Length: 71
Image (tube, rainbow, N blue to C red; front, top):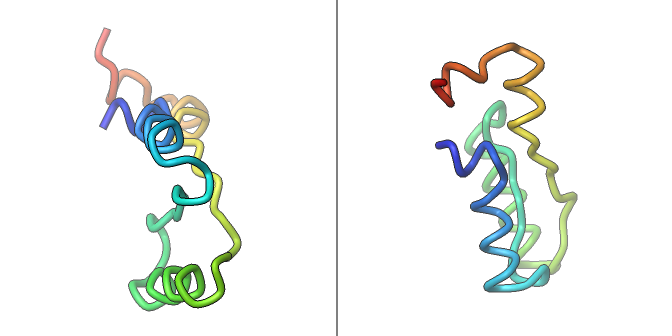
């Protein structure tokens, strides 16, 4: 969970597979059908509106850092 919050998972995927094969979809507030539609658009048309997920800013804003990174 910590590496996802810090963006390490996405960074590693970009580094290994490149930006053409790496996409970010925020599924946290989306229905299954909405996520499936985004994935279908990606495979059918080769593009879609990519989501920007910045978990670190969100948990910092909500003062939840200690919840995910005990110190």
